[in-house]
Length: 95
Image (cartoon, rainbow, N blue to C red; front, side, top):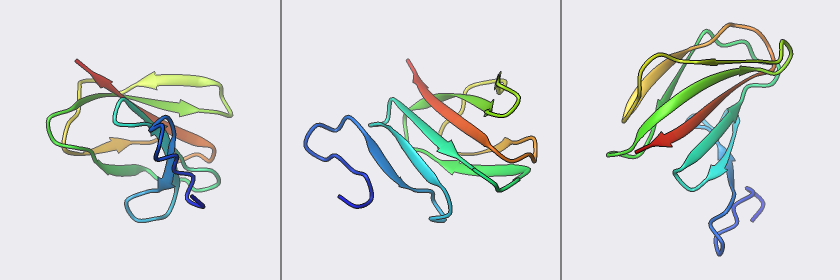
């Protein structure tokens, strides 16, 4: 439970990123949020479960903006980021 997982309800899952370098939380596979904090990456590669397409939003918490990435993504994909601190990426499953 120290990783933030709530197994019984499946409502909230918090784990480290693929490289165990950032927090990622979400509700099952329906949506996930990755927060980069003080880091300033230009790109981030995500590997999501097969067969699920995602809408991707880049959230700049300092500028208070949400920018949707063009297209729908599945499998392993790379998202361009603004190379500023306090950015998050929201992944939302689409039908």
